[in-house]
Image 1 (cartoon, rainbow, N blue to C red):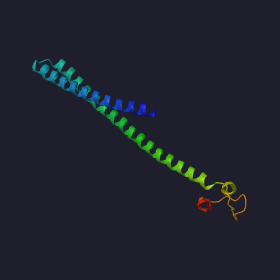
Image 2 (image 1 turned 120 degrees about the vertical axis):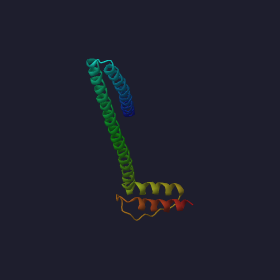
Image 3 (image 1 turned 120 degrees about the horizontal axis):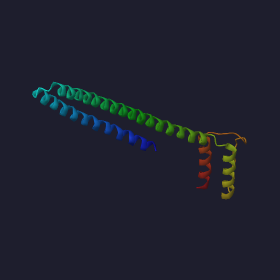
Length: 150
């Protein structure tokens, strides 16, 4: 649904740009009417068209300003979401490596003894029960067991 909101913001920015261009066209049309009214000597009508031209010019600038603000906001959102994705990935990596590092050594040893018994081998580990080892120790111990199977 976040993508939907971003799409709606992009759509709104484009719509504001289109409205700005439309106001520019209206401003030009009003300026043409000002010239024609002056040529006819009708100053009151020329004044009204001049006011309309200025109003259209201001409206065009306002539309562009709003479009720019929406675009800047979207850029800021997209940057924050990219940053959040990176932070989430880092956190997931850290959590997965932390859970790997805290594997209870007694469970590792128990599994290794079970596997050695199934293979008919005698396994002599010198680590005390209940100690929590690191991945390096676990990997080294596991490699000894797997080497014993070869």
